[in-house]
Image (cartoon, rainbow, N blue to C red; front, side, top):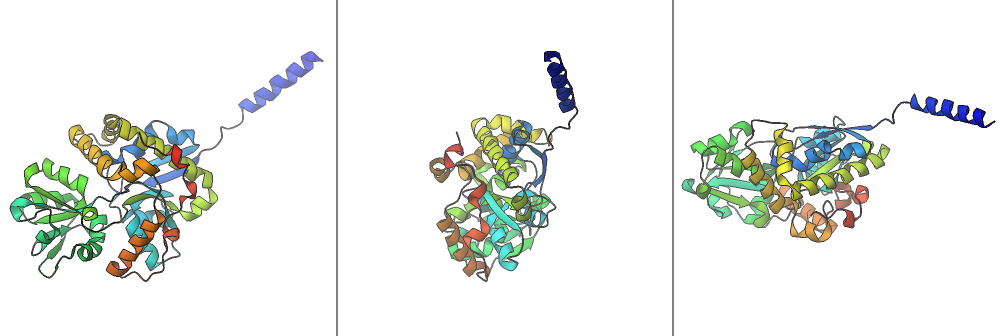
Length: 338
């Protein structure tokens, strides 16, 4: 009898060994921009197996601007992505039926800026932009907030020329003096300018957040249809991201190595400086230190929507709860950055 039981167990175990491994949930994720230092948190979560440990098969693609990431997710071409929450508000205001929502805040303080050159008459005073020519990439998240910033900072735009330019020529045009300033994310433009030979002392940065525009920045977005069908996958994705961003804060050099593995043409020193800037300015902010990474203050988000209503002509169809859904986040104690 004992022998029969043993034989039966062996047969059963043999049968188990032929079963397929548990399938992982596939998630296509789009970044807002190309592989640069601030993307380290996403890439470390992938490279260190944090997504895989959550049962996810994640692919991460570069993007073409923090506005363009939104329709990628809304259409389902990507299940999740990284984009500007203010542009999500505008997107949903135009069509509330679009199935896209923010589920984790990454840039608690937005990086929107106009960066100019002091030698061309631009200072850190927003009014120094009056009468200037500014280069504006149409898909840029900072440029999307220009109408709101104009109102918040009291800028007279009557003498300002906005020149539509592409991302690849943005910093070279400013470096050559073809424009006086450009729109962009501060940590990207500043370091790209330095790479184009513009010295630190000639760079003037006007951060929108420091001049009256109290908005949020880029967030992790999800296709709502995907989230409703795969809530545990979304929760696991966000848990993995907390680990990835924690690692990028604790060991920025490792984060930069993950970035350079995707783009060997980058300069490691520049990307390390870029990541350090993003961590200090936008990611590990005083609010995040106190409340944890990833959540938002819904009252502040609601106030930002009111700001955008007035300055961007929103119809008022969108409330804070329509834009951000915190149900997939782990408890705050599990979202503290080192």
